[in-house]
Image 1 (cartoon, rainbow, N blue to C red):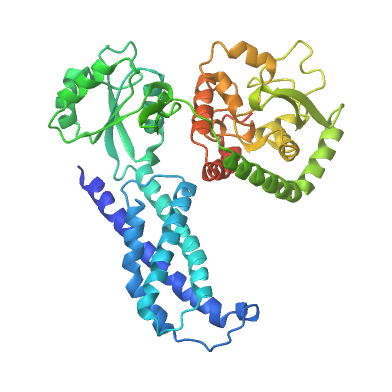
Image 2 (image 1 turned 180 degrees about the horizontal axis):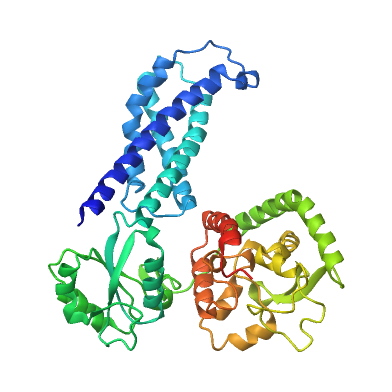
Length: 469
């Protein structure tokens, strides 16, 4: 392990703890001030006198260790926390909530001091905000270090399939992930020199020591069990971390669950993506979010209405039949971005330099502004905010037999945005099979927090995606 990597792995968690402690103490002090000295007192008057801040300061000293232990149990101090801030946000919410519950239990030992329940409610809110902001700053700082190649882990890839190529290219390009790709291993000698070839499996032990490799990422097809056993046997006794990624996310998109029925264990290889309560939660969220979003964007939609009508002939909206949940058909709404005779020769995918756009059409597609009317589809119930993108029956019939698990997309409502889209998998240059793999992963791993994460990432993807069409 290099000195810079050692310092990064040591100081980043310590810095995180320091920031958390500062945020926790600040949340107590700010909440105390809001409750007893801010204009907030006009809404909730102080009727029993203002307690001294000393009691709260003593309480902070007593409970900060509890907060840190709880945060550690939620794995908030792990090394290389290169995550999306919304992933961290939901864990922080759980950690703060649990810490507050424990803190309220500790109040039992301070019964003589008049603690305000409203202060603790404010502490809960302020702690979540302050800790999230401080974590965001630290995540940016950590990624900046990695972008300058400070503290990177030396890794190598094993495999020569599409997933192995993707891992190699992505980690080589995205230094902020905290990895420096030294090369790849394969039993076959490479046909080209685009990637650094380190040798076959037998050369693994020597290369791990020579290149000081910290991590080996294995990407082999499911049938290559013998190769995996050979790799692990060759590296016995060597202090290196192994990570396995199935080819095309085979395991991730087919989560195995063990369920016992009357004493007999069954392996559930496919289950319903959402139960009735989850469907209700998702539907309520869709209605509220769509209504608020349409209300907020109504001035923008009015401007787009004028621009579409002024710059081209034809109707304002483009209505097209799509296939949704359980294969049911519905008409999707879009602001028209193409000429009225765009598909006079039959259905076709959008191309990179498509000449069928109207004067403003390409701009609408680039920032997905043509999709705004689909929030009406969500209100009606044909679509959801998040889900696989809906497709036409013509293209579905072409791809359902050649693309693995293509029809699995119809197990949930289609969406305005999705897990594939926020990972840059949109446009004519992205493999359809890979998009489907991401869609199936979303279906098998749905949660409301997952939806919120995708929505937040969508805004980032809209403005920075190179594949936006």
